[in-house]
Image 1 (cartoon, rainbow, N blue to C red):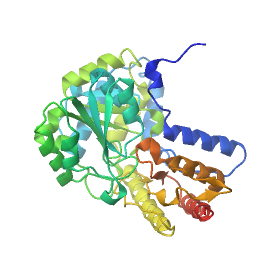
Image 2 (cartoon, rainbow, N blue to C red):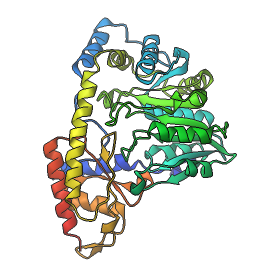
Image 3 (cartoon, rainbow, N blue to C red):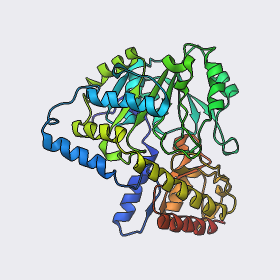
Image 4 (tube, rainbow, N blue to C red):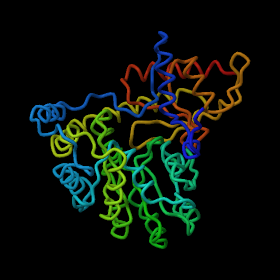
Length: 398
């Protein structure tokens, strides 16, 4: 029997994908499951974006392989977007378009990490950060944060975590899974620390930048001392409801982009040609559908927070972005159902699935084993029913 590699054995299965699969299996048996597990907008891709894709197909211009780092017009559109939305100046040579932001992250880690390198990752974190770091035989270094501090690391914690082996700090803002957003003042405190450690580069995951409820998104790359030490990762999935289109991108100093271009040329080559053309329209066309989706997410967030307040012994921050709530449910650990104890968040997530028929994701995979992640990218009716089920299921625990 063929044995899997040591590289693969270092990596855990994606917790979000695993729970989504369990949810689908239960639904296939006829169970009415409300899935709040995947980070996927429940809106359709805006019509003008889909029309652009149809035009691209009919034109015949996009039947061939695409350039490895992306079409020139898309890379320019991304530069224009950074100027418009983030007040940042990039050139096409700074941009690499990939098959989703996840590939952008993998390109960076594989291109620059060596055995013994350290990557600082504030926890809770998106599930793939540490796993991709481990794929490169490098070492994740976690900064643990908790609901009482809005799941945000401090400058003091960052300072303590940095060593001569630190190569990257990687974080998301708005955050998956917590919805927390770092303010300009908080980012400035990190910059003051990082200015003392010029060997540390930052990977800023800004995939949720358009789903923010507290004003304008701020990127750490906007601080002059960090522009050439920051790699911004973004994509179309969340803000434009284009998860299936698989378009992500990074913006970085040209030598970093060139390295990732080289790697991508040996892995996937260029991203989908038609999706790239549609992305030009998404970035430069009508932005109102994105704003409308954000407003709907905010309305849903407020509904969910109100419903959570009706459930005893839950602690939850008020997320300022993304479309998740990440409550601390540890008060329910150790309780019993039908003679079986709920030992941890893994058990609790499975209990909610099988007893409450609500799919959520254990916080263990996000580095916060006291929490459970619920996505509110679902209809208001589904959300109301889901948290009614959650409340009823938790009341059964003794």
